Length: 171
Image (cartoon, rainbow, N blue to C red; front, side, top):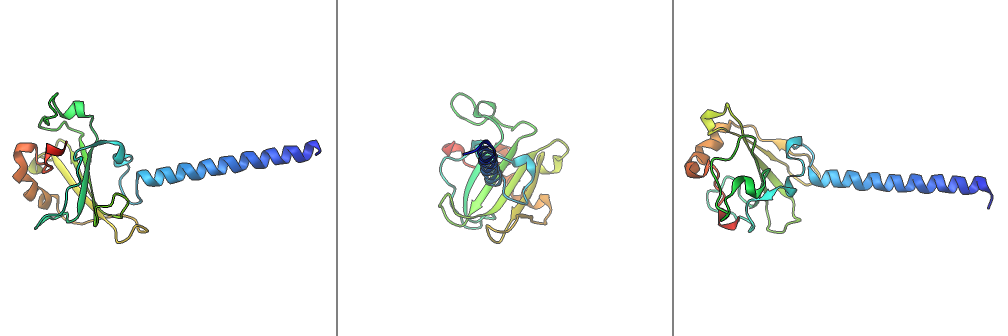
């Protein structure tokens, strides 16, 4: 082969590799944060998992389905040496709850519920609440329009655990 053909083949090979790496990178980004969700929860599945066991649906459950919860804190920041949670959670804490209709970990996430601990939200225990839903895994998540006080009216029943209902025996 002559040098010009070898040079073109090298360029094509490098371009192909870069394209494949770009596709892999974009797929990784898409797995980390579904479309329509806020960027501050990107990578939440790598955060500390609050419940080892999936939380199943209950009667009168506003987040009906199978739930997994994540927090943007290390265990050492939110729990003592015996793995008992330390309350209140620090300001800046974000808790993400993903809800699926089935227990299968690869099934479609139908609801994302987010709690953000922020000063200035005294009427809701210093928490800001927002939920996102989607009709299919091909669709973007969209925010559910309702007052955050609606969430807190239920969460204030968990005042002893900083308004967080998750049972930490699975921690």
